[in-house]
Amino acid sequence: MPSQYFDEKLAKRCRSFRFEFAKRPLAGCTVVVAGGSGGLGAALVALLAKESARLVVGYRSNRQRAEALKDAIAERYAQKIVLVEGDIAKPEVRGAYLDAVENISGRSKGSCVLHAAAIFPGDPARASFEALNQKAMEASLEANYLAPILLAKDLGTAMETAAEDPASSLAVAGGGSIVLLATMQAVAAFPSSLNYAAPKAALVHAARVLAAQWKHVRVNVVAPGATVAGMAEASVSSGKYDSFIERGAIPRFGRPEDVARAVRFFLEPDGYVTGQVLVVDGGLTLRR
Image (cartoon, rainbow, N blue to C red):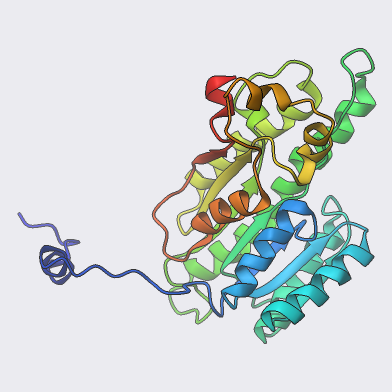
């Protein structure tokens, strides 16, 4: 019995080698980039602005840096971004993201239309093994697991709810997408990384749980390695990772653009990947 889901027109087009690749698929899409003013997040904001996405960009407290990014995006890409300030561990701040999405989308209160979200916030949680205590571990758990997952829950639920209503004009074709930022230390064991790696590993597993739970929202993770910006910057600049280049484990250190392109891949509308972790580390976790 022939499949009721088989698309003969699509199959015929493929047999004729006529493939469709969208140009600037995120143009006009509303995307949240939490932690978007930091070293890695800012690169994604620039990439999405270049593609004419409508951007809600969050930052914790460094307003000067956030405003500088806003000005740079306006100057270089003629795009406006909406800024949201605050710690995403707080419910009112997470609510402010949804409010900003409604405002930028021109929708009424409670009718959120959101295409995608990338959640960058976290903390390097640098504490020596000897100095590790309950307070330090709880702070890392909140910054690197609880807060990002709670924001993903709020934003993903808004997208899933809209998609579940067949009569809703707010549903996004192909469903929505959420990308969480982890670390190579979440997928490979590095000594002295307990306080940072364990919450990030929990975040990876939570992303898979959400991906399995939601039908219309894809959830994926990007795990950067030793990059010259972001949380690894201090370690890279101190020479901690020089040996990896010297013995050929990696050809160079990572760049913010490397991470931005990986995140953008997962954000693209109507994607076909969910519940996955993309490690952007130049092969470091394989060859170290």
